[in-house]
Picture 1 (spheres, rainbow, N blue to C red):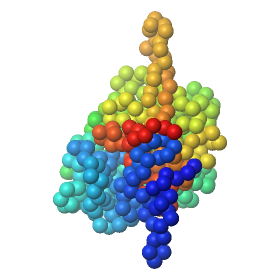
Picture 2 (cartoon, one colour):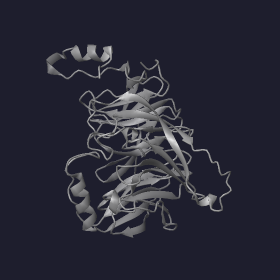
Picture 3 (tube, one colour):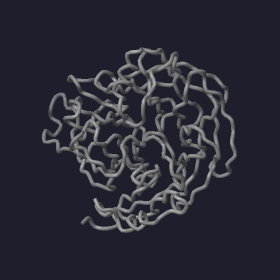
Picture 4 (cartoon, rainbow, N blue to C red):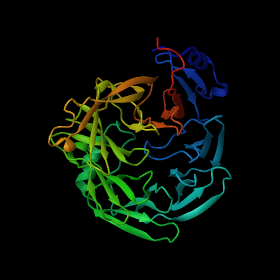
Length: 406
């Protein structure tokens, strides 16, 4: 791959006093024709995990983490403002008020992204962590671990030793609790106890009483994706394995909260799908994609018409045929030639395919850092984090191509 001219020129500049030169602010990817912009100012800045909301309800602001705190980015002007000037753990941005919720020293806080005013919201239970805030911002959700998990040896999805760590962590059967915390009353309520490893806790973007979580571990050994109501009822397994070595995971809600989407492989590393489960009806939709287009994480546009993916590294489950790209996917359902006449039609999976378009070449990205794609609220950009220039920065690629492909 040849870097675009603007990138080559930047990389030839010698920074004063040995300071690493910042990546370019904007360029056209020569392999795709799509415009890419750098949104962050400080190396080491990151966007949130793919299923954590980082956008204010008006769609105008993105909140990111920086090495020195939290920053708010105007999505129209790309102006960046520091809103918290100390290292904290960002949970997400509230879908109702637009406050950014974070944890510091075992306490939960909310910061107004416009005024920078901060309110303390409560304490994290001992041994616990806060993972999500519900859509009307009346409950937090998280987990408590009643023991000491095996230490991780890296980061991301592909670091050496992760598989061994996950095997040991699953086998340890450390007791855990899934809980909710009411910030107004201070009440903490345990809604599930388990010796399975509970992870990826996330609230529905539209239903304040709907939670999703996973049983973490080696994906071929766990029944991963589950939902539960905040009153502890309705525990439901979302996907049931039908073959040995079938895996599914990295689940997320559709923007309207009606569908749960997840990476499905039947079996692992061989046949790839983006699978959907309709929460109300149980109807399933599976979109097939090629190994070269598989992604560590997927996400869906606000209007539900497109998906995005962040590609995979050389050690991914799709290797050696995976692609290191930011992808845009357009779903196409397979035509039903039965006209719905089969007696069990309602129970059958609706198949389809994902038509991929490459947006950003990530050949120089180290996938120990997961790019974690999200669509901006207007659906015009896809935000991701990358270390393709060295230090980690937050970038956005325009969905519409600026130039025709070569």
